[in-house]
Image (cartoon, rainbow, N blue to C red):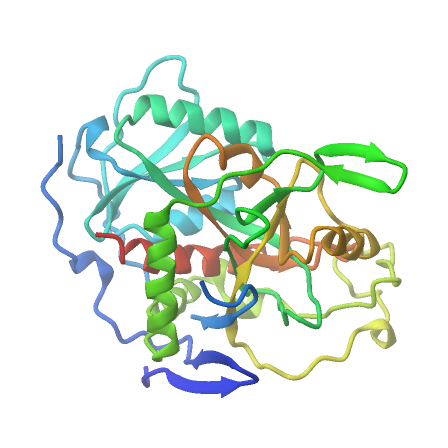
Length: 358
């Protein structure tokens, strides 16, 4: 694959790269470790995988050897996460009270626990993370990786397949629970405050941004290799169409075959570049699928980049960084066609990030 090109457009940097010919050595060649007892809120950087997991687990470590947690909710998110492992480990026995499903393995030098929640929602996430921390006592922090619904705006040119990464601001820790608050005559007053991601991961994000600005976008290669699998292929996702907020989905088809093109929003052509956006994520137990409500809530919260359903349940109990691949626009046109590719983009970014941790 030709080296990534640095392209500066409207103050943002973007890496351009083919998704068909990855050039980096396979990540599985990373030496295995011995078992061990602030940038602009909507700064945008692009994205592009690699299948390197050892499919036959040969090593079995101890519970205390695992130090990183990787949380996902859906089966497609779990499948993408498993493909990011450089080595898969044998399963370990667990307490009968722990009903979680785990995949164990290594990413770079970090022994990692991948936990699948089974159900979406903040309560499910909180319970699953508590069980993981009890079973794997050395896991101190991690990443919350999966799909989310984007909030396109004049400030953030969010497209399907882009990645949104939680970034704290002066007003919040990076995640806001939008469905929790007090109802007042002049609207809803959001209550409570969620913790910011841990400094170790925020510092890694800064380093990753710097690498991307200099044209070194490693996760493009992870994504390229992942996209070679039919399940995660970009061309299986279909067209990326944003509709006017007042135009609702035409009934009859789950996809938008019956939706009228004249109601689509004209946007500048961007090709298939994947961008990374840093800013505030809205989290709650309700599925956001109304464009007018999406924009109303986003405005009330000072501008968010996406909606999702797990982060609010874990930020105060498990230090982690939410990373979301955009699979829809949080409107009535929501469907599942972009979920595999979006899950892959988020997983690829998360892997590059974890490889920067000491």
